[in-house]
Amino acid sequence: MAKELTARAEDYSQWYTDLVVKAQLADYSSVRGCMVIRPRGYAIWEKMQRTLDAMFKETGHENAYFPLFIPKSYLSREADHVEGFAKECAVVTHYRLKTSPEGGVVVDEGAKLEEELIVRPTSETIIWNTYKGWIQSYRDLPLLINQWANVVRWEMRTRLFLRTAEFLWQEGHTAHATREEAVAEAQKMVGVYAKFAREWMAVPVIVGVKSETERFAGAVDTYCIEALMQDGKALQAGTSHFLGQNFAKAFDVKYADVNGKLEYVWATSWGVSSRLIGALIMTHSDDNGLVLPPRLASVHVVIVPIYKTEEERAQIRACAEGLLEQLRAEGLVAKFDDRDNLKPGFKFAEHEMHGIPLRVAIGPRDLANGTVELARRDTLEKRSEALEGLAKRIPALLEQMQQDMYNRALGFLESNIRRVDTYEEFKQVLDEKGGFVSAHWDGTPETEALIKEETKATIRCVPLDSTPEEGVCIRTGKPSHQRVLFARAY
Image (tube, rainbow, N blue to C red; front, side):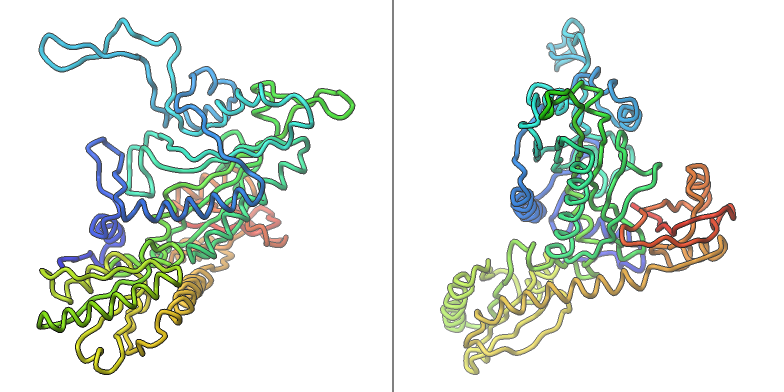
């Protein structure tokens, strides 16, 4: 197989793009800035979606769907929100086309909308306009709604899965009677994201709160999970926002409390997107292709026959079909790759590129010995295994692989968090090693912007488990009461 990925050490960015395309996860679209998610990539998203959806429902949330189009005036009601998204909005101005005398179609200038419509960049405004009609009393609260949808943010510089003009996501939007309930909700949901990343994606993450500059437009606080990719750059993998009463006031959403007094409700929103697939790729994959944690793999085991004669082929097929039945009885997805026009070596390389966790090779000698060759995708380790009872042992092996992948990624993360106390050391670590840099900052947006301008590093978060520590800002020398995590990021 002509896999020919660019080596990570040579050009990490090109390696990533090569892998996404050659592992058949996504393709570039004819629409600028958009992508086509191929079946192999969409299968990963479907597993993510099913798992997260179950986690949301376990915490009391229900799914709904809201319009793709948002009246322009809605975005104007919350000043910080509109300022944060104005430069990324796609705008619909007309509702009809007409044929042109020269052929083809043109915009019908007589079909101009009275009010322009914004293609959904996020749904706070349309949802809070709707909630006004749904919430009257404290008995209507809390309102816990999630939406699975696509959004459009007009990005000029795009990269498959990580940053595209249109992408898939979920967005939770909740309403509460008290500030305390809303804060607890925002923190709970960032905890759900962290659990999913760690236990399903095998991606260790740091849970924290964003600085004022980096928080979501219109939020009071933004909680986040931050992951570290193999090239030492950070990736924001999910966010959960405490919105205070900003949107309730903008859309006049009030409830009558137990005494009949009208109060504004308190709000949250939270979301993760198909960028999680990019995080998965860049955390685990190698120069041979995709490496998938077994819990998110759409195929767990592939069986490859090795034979010279049709008689050998028939004998191996009979053995493989028995093994397939046993594996499926264990709840696993397994396939038999009996394509007769491809050599085993080509198949091995192809399945490595596609990230199938376990490969079983069966040849005539294996049949005679009652064994198979078992290959792990994560370590590329190959060993001989007894065929008897193999299907019963494989689930435990897949769980071990899941844990091993997490442990390797956790070791990488922990070894790439470095404490620094001077600006020179700060810049040196960023340039020579990358990763997260734990440093003191004076708490001002001006200093944060200056550091970003000079080093391209941003404050990723203030970790929730961090403790106060007196020090001085690395850039200004002013007093600081806590370290924050800086990194260069996607």
